[in-house]
Image (cartoon, rainbow, N blue to C red; front, side):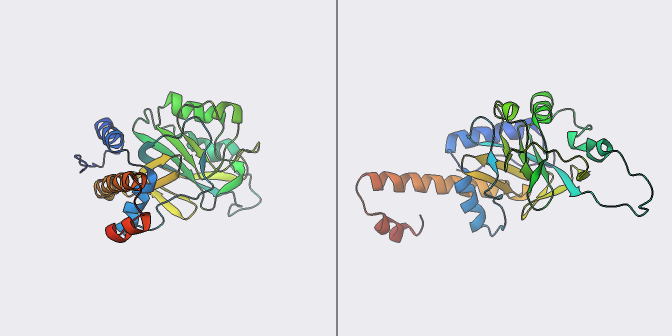
Length: 245
């Protein structure tokens, strides 16, 4: 089954998101099938670090166009005797003040290696970004805090761990809407994020149609294989015949 849409540069387009939702519901495509499809297309580093897990409600498939927020550690300025900016000024942009509607998009924050000793967001900010700005979900390249609020969130909040410490004074935001690094994976604005109970996969914008079409074919083939296994056939024999598992 082919994805009957064109993925346009308008990464938050509601009609594109709706068509993808219908396609995923009909085909039952999972992140496992998408990862296999990307392997077949020669795309490296598409699966985000396995330490990143959904910390909120629900582990069904969620997706959206990536809206990256890039963080870096705070370092000294060129003139070390001068006072630096306030910690709020350094982190304010993580709340993406220029965004009024995040529908169809996934908030993605990263600082390179996973930041496990300070939270890239907390309960107040996740509530604002998901309930107020209507982002489809959040991927944090590290920790989150305020477990009581985050665990009640209906949209996926994917993070490595909970921790009480925030990032103010130790990290700052350097860019919004461009790119960010989450572990070994570079996330560009407009790439597509797919996350479910298996993990999170990043699909380059220009390969969404190919990747999902291939993933749907993989899901269909695996469904047929599973039916044959349940009917008593030998799985090694089926794999020898079909050339995949």
